[in-house]
Image 1 (cartoon, rainbow, N blue to C red):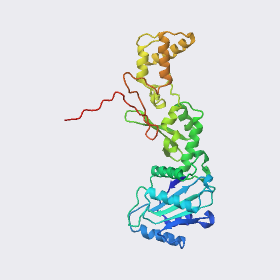
Image 2 (cartoon, rainbow, N blue to C red):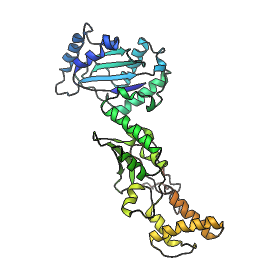
Image 3 (cartoon, rainbow, N blue to C red):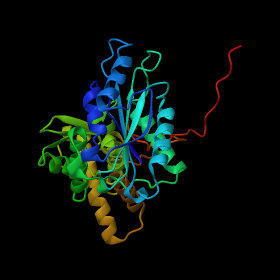
Image 4 (cartoon, helix red, strand yellow):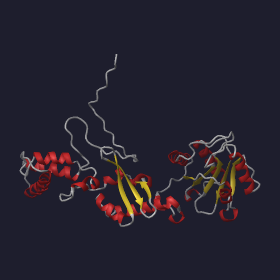
Length: 358
């Protein structure tokens, strides 16, 4: 089950759409506090109560609940009304006028909940437009009533999308297609740029990357990756990227294209160990090049010298910059994605509780 929330300020237009018997094969499955004599009577009932609280911009409540086509034979009018009413209660839409209309013009069963955001006591209903709250409730109700969970964005009918939904799905389709051929952030940015999409990183105050956004340049609409789809969060995409430091790259480009690259650590390693695995001083660029050369030479000779082990260690750091070795207990570095659920938990096993002040 999927819910879409559409607050507005025009009861007349909404009621005419929701109760369109000819085009939508609409039927009222539940209502409270309004006259159902006609569309005009329904609208008038809503308007009278809305006027009891002046200064409210979006006093019209409208939420559509869509069920999977696979549940068509399972959800009759009575069950749909019951689920919609429970959804309303959990969302805090209580003590107010409402009408629940069922439409039967599509393969998937769905209802439109039209309600007054000014309740019976003249107060504004709050929290009824929370998308995160709605998502949690629809998931819980889908599970409670044994309904079918959606199978992702691939099955959504693109031709019926409008506004920001259409843009969001266009971004989803374009980005997922580009990811099949891109193994670095630089490649992805270039591929999307050719499709009219800008890629930008969201950074913390210390410059570390915590998220990614995508902008449709034609419509100038921006979404964070995780808002488009959980699979497009910074953390999820970055796990599949190869963040190898290109030796000849301009240093100013490195943090942008390789957000996890730890310059200080690589500099430390390459300054400390030379091509022969012995201590020496070198510039960062020389050290990185030596690390690659030494690793290749060790692999060809199949040697087991101490230098070979160091070369392998350097190669591992270069090829897996996400993993930064630390000295002592705990620590390391992590980039926290602002809108992802994949949060890294750093626990210090040597934690000592603070002493109480006496």
